[in-house]
Length: 438
Ligand code: BES
Ligand code: ZN
Image 1: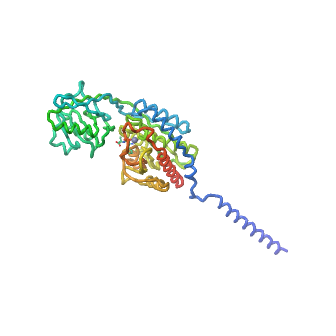
Image 2: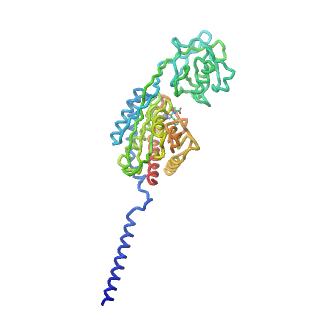
Image 3: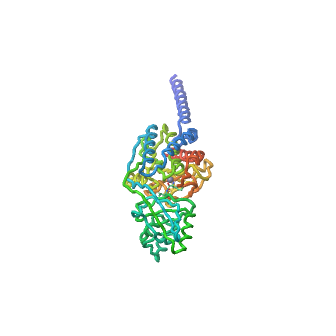
């Protein structure tokens, strides 16, 4: 009797044990295993609304030129604050000082024998003005590319220096010519278009640029020693301020990790549709799609001000926030000029810096079967972050010497929405990869 009862208990025990095992087994099938992907790219991809992104771009372009420290930039900044607030991001208007530059008037002419030939020219950002009444009847002296080594035997005293674009920074050319006594400098472009570019800081002498065809006229006239130049440059350079507009999306998880996604919203004196309303439109669309997606890191969306005058906003942000500690920053994704071109260029500035983020973005672009290339460029807002050893990727549509860049032709109608969509997909796929590995 006792033995039978023991046997029954024994059988019962085995049955319960077996049931328990099955329950654990079933349970295991339902629970995701720890490193199984949790975030799906395809789900996010379906949320992309390219008309909405183009709408953001249209609004930015409609403010007119968004030049550093001036009305257009300020109004665009206010618009961005509103959008970030609508997306329930905690929004911060980070103000920083900038030299505000305005070009008022330029008149250049050649005096050949008794006739005056006016030439088309444009003022480089941060050029100073000519003295009251302008520079009159000054000899023009050619200085090659304006490199120091070329100028050793040249004296520009009481004359206007004429140099070609190329090889060294415009600022360096201007300083070299000023050191050799020049009253002003004319830079001849390599293309048949004006140069809209910055001298980074107030220049010691007036500096203007001409297209290659206007430049040829000057070179031709130089052959006659009797030729002289007249130049009036009027500009203002004043202390002012500009803003980075920052939208912070907090993770609900216990993390201090941050992913930065940035795009500059200022422009040169153009509509700046591709450069860089396109990048900001992409940024806003990404922020809209991710509004209710809880990721295992915070995202800082940053629309940078005053990029075009020398990366002033991104420098300010990187140096004030990450000079001391940067280890919690996973990386920085920079979008600049994503709406026109032939292939997606996946870049960073320097081949020695971290390729962690650029490799993930490159893999994403290749997975999406996009026409892709890699390159090195420090010409945009990722540069200050990369200098602080933060992993970066700079996404732009190539060629990196793009059509319509810094010209009046950089308008909304030239943008290709498909390219902007492609870039948004690459960013979302990069974010999914990061999220599933955190
Ligand atoms: N958007 C350009 C940079 C760029 C150029 C991106 C070509 C993609 C292709 C940027 O706004 C710019 O103009 N940068 C300046 C340099 C900066 C330090 C002022 C430039 O390239 O001259
Ligand atoms: Zn740009």
